[in-house]
Length: 229
Ligand SMILES: *Cc1c(COP(=O)(O)O)cnc(C)c1O
Image 1 (cartoon, helix red, strand yellow):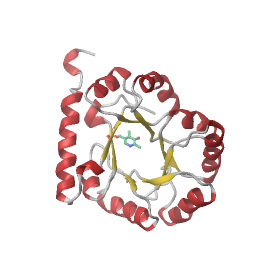
Image 2 (cartoon, rainbow, N blue to C red):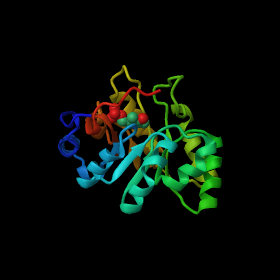
Image 3 (tube, rainbow, N blue to C red):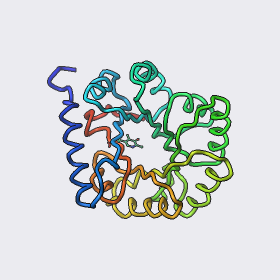
Image 4 (cartoon, rainbow, N blue to C red):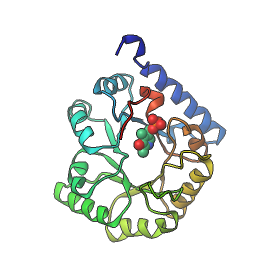
C-alpha cells in the first residue's frame, strides 16, 4: 500500500478518545469508565504495532485462527495487552480461545458454556465472559434472544460458574441503534452485570451516551477492511 493510504492511527485514536469523552460528558459519565477496544480483524500486525506505540492496549479480533497468527508474540512483548474475542466461537476452538484471549464476548449457547468451563479448568485460565444478545432478533445473527437472556446468564454464571462480566450486542445494521442499546442496558442492569459492550465505528458515541463500558471500533481506527466472508 502506498504510504499516502496508511491510516494515521495516532490521530484517529486521539479523535475517538475525544469523542468518547464528549459523549460521556453529555451523559454525566466518567470517560474513564469506557474502554476503547481497537478491532484489528483483517488488518496487518504492523497496524496493531502502530496502535500499541500510541499506548492503546485493548484489542479485538473476531477469529481465533487469525488472532493466533497475529497476537501471541505481541502479547509476550506487551504483558498489559488485553485481547477480546468478538466473533462467533465454535466449541472445538474453545480451548484455543481460552488459551489466547483475555475476554470472550460471544458466549451464546449452553454447549459453548460447557466447552469453556472444560477448557478453563484444563488450562487454569479464566477469561472474563460476555453473553451476546441478539437484540434485533435477527435470524442470521448469533446471540441469545432478549427474552432468553436472563435465564441464560443465570445458567452460565450460577450453574456453570463462568466469570460473566457483562453483555454484548450488534444491533441491526439498517436501524437506529439507540433502542437496542437501551434494551441491552436493561438486561445488564436487571442481572447485576457491570459490563456493557456496545457501539462500533458508526455508533459508539450513542452507545457511550447510553451506558457502554466497552466500545468496539475498527474502521474508524484502522481504515476500511478488505471485503470478508
Ligand atoms: C468488526 C466488528 C466491530 C468493528 O466494526 P467497525 O464498524 O469497523 O468499527 C465491532 N464489533 C464486532 C462484533 C465486529 O465484528
